[in-house]
Image (cartoon, rainbow, N blue to C red; front, top):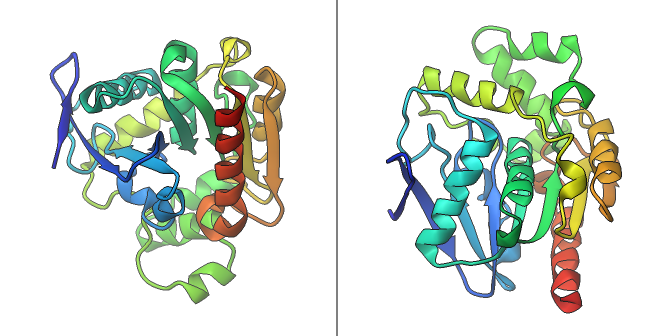
Length: 262
């Protein structure tokens, strides 16, 4: 497994597949690169896909110290540097969308086009999930996992696609790393910086997402200059997987248009 070294001495495991324009795929909170297993192939024909295991997940080092979305963005830059990639498209979902915002804000010369999926600006301006959702995720034992699956997918999806899912958390993460990831996501706030994003931006969200309420998509689209917004009716948080027949072509068309317009 290849690793990128960071300025603070952490090894970040990464995965690069295919040819074409580089496309960085960023997973959600407390997840590793397997988040993208179900749809990575959708981008293979046009893009060299790059994923990574956030610090605290997968094959990466797991220091017990504060994490942040800004720090995760620096780890992405370390991976791009290790691969010799100067500029890449960036598609981040959930917490990965928060990391993608940090990349576009703090490293604009490295981001070719930006796709923000099922994510939020964070901070006091964001629309928070309801207390009922929080309580369901705090239940002990398997009940929390069942609640998370219901927030990710419509009832029809698990019935047709049994077995494990790559978007329900890295099962091998230490408990402290899970807490560190939660704190990083909760500490995110790019509201004041969003108007400075210069990369062409597409915001995508599931219309029935209550894990990260869909109202956040409009906030992002209104805040980022020239951003486009696409809400997928009936989709929940894992819109990118369950509604891939809509979402993947949408993203591919947007990235191709951005390349033609350069």
